[in-house]
Length: 280
Image 1 (cartoon, rainbow, N blue to C red):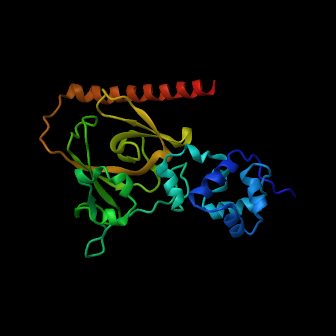
Image 2 (cartoon, one colour):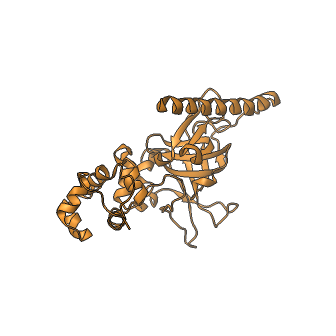
Image 3 (tube, rainbow, N blue to C red):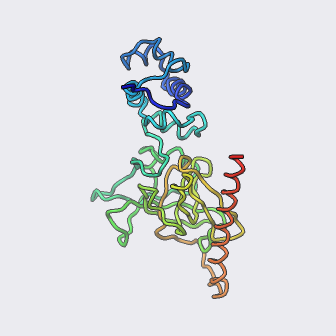
């Protein structure tokens, strides 16, 4: 039986990229895989295709699933995701992989609610997985929240999500599996490019591996974010506004949700048109 893997695609480029990021020579990798240097060199140069048994060894060595090792162009990933690969975290294309969350506990060994101050906001995207960064954040507890869930509080900037205003603090529940994101609900999304954003989410993982992010302020257009560009998602729990907000009229309360539905549909149509244009 031929154990050749069908359709190699990006394998040779990915092998070279991953090896160089590990600062290993071809000789070292070949030795660790118990194959000859010439054999490994032929895989990196695309002269030969490895059999399934070798692909499994390569997958184990680089700690990356075979499908992603072969079919995903790793050179197109942001540096934040490549750093995750360097640390041995497999890529997440579905939003369902196990995530390790850095956290702190109180004297009763219960999870704290860490608060990300405004001054520490810019550093969160690089320190979110670093226990040394997390342990110096202010921490508190709220007795009305479940002790069996993990919460964190984030500062919110801008006017895109009324009634939550600029300067407010929003508390979220950590979401392990992004497939459970509910359409039309508010979430705190952490991305490498945008940092901390608070938006209404629409789950499009099965459709195109993304989320549609919408604002309650209809002056802001919806936009899509790919799963692989997201670091964390926190489900909205509560918020603290820095100032008192006057109640809105019942008429505007009725118009707002309707406009957001239209806004969401327009965003989806734009994305579909773009996908069609890209295929032409």
